[in-house]
Length: 385
Image (cartoon, rainbow, N blue to C red; front, side, top):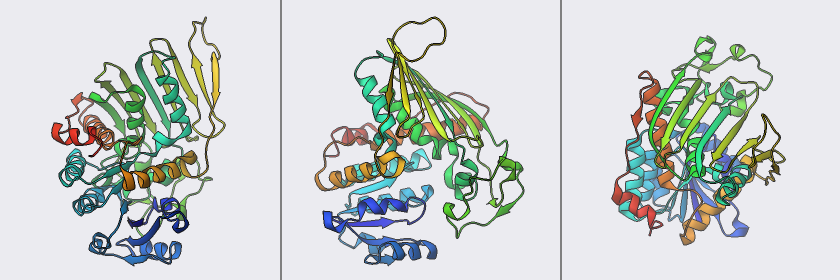
């Protein structure tokens, strides 16, 4: 397989799983509009052609392409690749507006081109284990999903570059939360019908040390020793996204869900509680060796889990999820067939993130989540055939 990459920045590490000539798949061309991106690409894959012209990618006779640009550039690049008939991997979130997300799915359906979205959490061992427990019926029908996300590296990850600028990310409830909103939908087996949110910029907006980091990467400035958050330096020149937010969701199944996100906690992990009609589960950490508790009997007060499942992780990024993600995409690009990720689900995560962000910036009023065009949804329901 001949594979192209568009955008060689924060998620460029996925090239390690896409580029394996001995296994029959090779990254042959990389496109990036920045000098830093092109230089990094040439260093990592010396055999690949390097360009700043998307047209070179579209005419390269590719079997697949990875769109790894900043979020606000996903739509024009992904649409161009789909219109060229190239099986396309688009990193999450699918887009930064509902309109752009719908345009990407519409382009895939119109051109009968294969689209895959990089929601790698569906391949994370902790999330897969929770999903398997739910699907076994052990806790009954899901009625509630609660997720708390302690984003301890938020100051380094999201407030020193374009993520902090709502013109490019919409907000972190979308950009960072799209992962967990998708997993909430996946665990509950239903999409959101209506949502309401609250949030604020409470810490990083008061940090006065700002810098232009456009020629840098997160690895250039990350420092675990920076604490407390008010002592961060070199934050993005524009910061107008929230650093703490919470959203409530009513799902179409009638289940209720919530997601809470904070970017200045001392620890960094996510905690899910899923409550069904016959019990509940909760994860304590989301990596290799962490635990998932199962309660399916009545107790007096607080009680240890009735059973504890230890998470067994894999090798590679995100607990082994990244290599599984790319392997599934390459198989899908070659052969088609069902996938664990879903473009429609990715669109629904964007829609909730956008509506929730609109809600929190308008006083927290409840807003409906607009549905996807039924004809477009049907293309994906039929497995993109």
